[in-house]
Image (cartoon, rainbow, N blue to C red; front, side, top):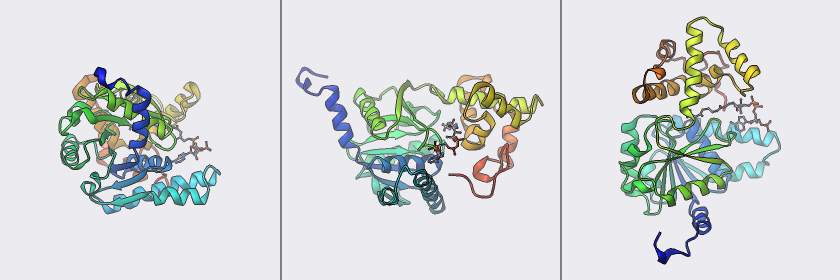
Length: 306
Ligand code: CAA
């Protein structure tokens, strides 16, 4: 910061960031994208949620309806509040059409680097010059994704956790080119949506996925080795370690396909300890992806839970 900008104290940067993040574009309406759209709308932001799949958008909206209904049921939100949140969420198929109006763009599309690069290339050319770009990637390189943007300094990892409306953490990932101002804006955004943020260096698996995925991976190897049943392994971690969910239940919640793609990436980047278990590959090939398909390590009722 030059001597001439002394007035721009951190507090002012934060205030500016708060007022700047009024209009959010969330690209991707899967479990994570829908959750992110919901928490932003609950914080009073105007949200556009887009998805190339119309049925995907419909499912995402249904998930938001279910989640808000839970809040109404618990008396945490009244019907008027719910309607106001829903009225702040617009949906559509074309992210590019909404980019020019966005203060913040959050990418929550599948974990495929080519898709993310193409999206950042396109949207960064259309977004206003102040817009902040967040990627919800759970393990891919934020630095690499930022490289496709016209201004990598404004790109940051915004890693949310499932279920987004409930989980308190936002992992803010600093890419090599991410500026201090971008980190300050990301932290202000976390505060505005009621999340506690940690800032981590861009390194495969960050601070969360690397540890979380390893626990799930070992649990699957234990099932393969016949050490104990999935239910007993989950009970062990819930009652013995006070985890809110066992590692296999959690794998079902996150999605076996999601876990597999994270493991494949970490295996390439960090080595043998992350080699995906054969059982996981087989289950993904069989379409047993967890709650979203009604079957994973457990069998669920027809409708996936929101
Ligand atoms: N929307 C709104 N509220 C929800 C919700 C949703 N989708 N899901 C649950 N809730 C609320 C419930 O209404 C309930 O509220 P009260 O406390 O006011 O009663 C509260 O959350 C707890 O829910 P439940 O009573 O239904 O069930 P629970 O106590 O078993 O909690 C859980 C469910 C919050 C999912 C808990 O089991 C948990 O924290 N599990 C671990 C989740 C986790 O580890 N997530 C991270 C996954 S890794 C990831 O996401 C990152 C990645 O990159 C893949």
